[in-house]
Length: 473
Image (cartoon, rainbow, N blue to C red; front, top):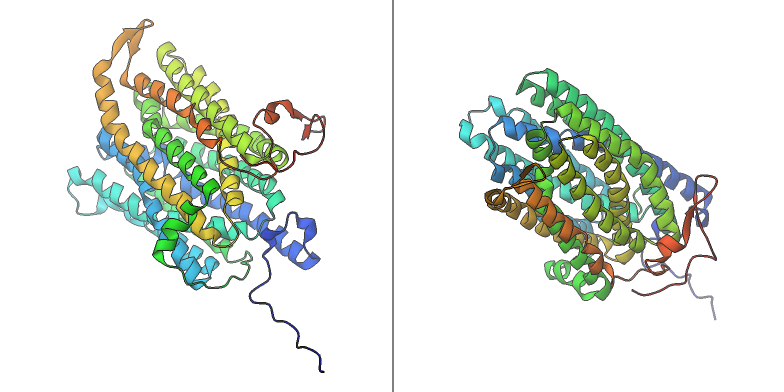
């Protein structure tokens, strides 16, 4: 009898992201993954400048200059959520073609270049009364491709970064992006306060496109683990994630959270600019305080999550976001002092640092490696539909609440105060939706407070024992 022929693997080897730590990889792969992790932080820095200068105070200020009504202000904040409808399309293309880096680059290019039309809007032959609606449409188009870009990038990085390295890696990336974004926001705020509109907004948008394109170029230098093209039916894209019980619970939390956040989210910047009388520079300073604080807090949250799990961090973070931020906005209006805004900016870094990082990593951990892009796309779709619904309702809700303004505390309790009170009540209950979401290797939520302390060397350490054993729910 002859020897049996050697077996041939059915597909590519497991990607680096299937390992637990970098130390589990061979030297060559480990070096390439480390390089990609560093490049991801660099890419994120350029991308954050683009995002800062095409959203937030810049976009709201541009809309106000064009004469936008409250409903239009709410819509321009809501349509990026609606754009998550593109996520399943991105997942389908990734599964069918198996070329995530190329698809990510294409989607990112379109999402950046679309803003050239937004910058040119004052020069286009569009009636004045149509300009806000036209800008909303352009934001929607750019956001559709940005959502596809984000879905592909998330699944791609999930296959690159080992599981136990994600908290530190993406925590550092988020912190650096925050500082870079803050510097950009301060520069844009000072520029917008000193240069007349619309030229000020046009120049900011043009520079934003340039920095965004640099970030896209960095994608090409990052490794893309080989994948196998799969035949995926549209019905699978919409049904497979919902058949996973644990992931279905995460989807329910995601939908609830984004709905309640967007009920008040679109009106925070208008409230600061119009009700509190802040300048663009002052709004940028608040963002700067948040970002500088986040450089520390996000990294620390990443270390905590790597030790005790992402779910407890997310549960605590939603409570902090729900209680601290609306309370700060309300107190700033009632007292007439911006000290509450500066304090809220610090609280925002602590609270949202926990939420954004842990939600991202919990989604990666909850999605199975096989068809991960399909599961991530469904997260995007749930985020988008719920966020758009909340944002679309925010405008009419604020108009309604303005009819119930009453004297209070020596001033006026406005529609904004009612809106932020509703936000406080609904956001602070979001943790309840996370109770049934499973996460391997995590203890009970109370372990986060009982089992973690700030170590003497600047790190986080457990008070007793090692990380709890795997636990469902």
